Image 1 (cartoon, rainbow, N blue to C red):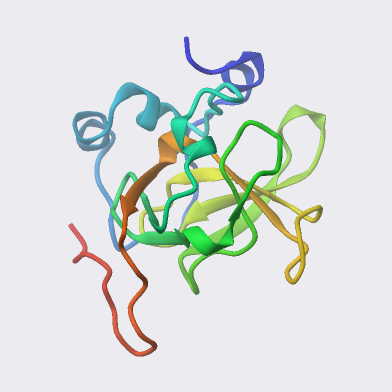
Image 2 (cartoon, rainbow, N blue to C red):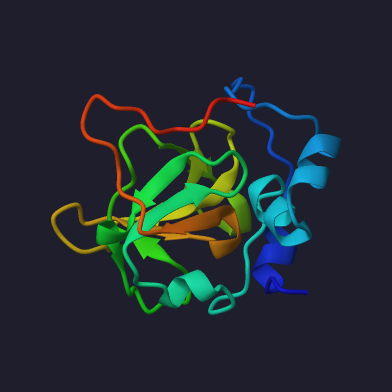
Length: 162
């Protein structure tokens, strides 16, 4: 399998009571997503470090949620964290939400898509300035759109809810 031991042990169903703009049944998510995407986005899995080609992607563009298409991160916030996962210093405004993750006998901050609730990864406070944050994301949760730019303030380029 593509995920490491921690991903296999830590996988769990998304249990949020919040309703999201994009809400599909479990069967619909399974049809829409690849097995790796489903494992990460819907079951909170973790891909093996270094397994995603997006870790070494440094072209200009926008990283979208692989589940619903919402823009999540601009390439100018991406940096090489040396962890083996795509890392960013800041998300697109209002694109992600966080919650406490108490798996593996520790507390971390989980990051999920604000539009579909898909699990993206975790955020840590050891990133570069000016934010000091490291959004450590699973590449399987992201879809890179090379050359795309964020809309000007006041414009909305998010795809319609499905």
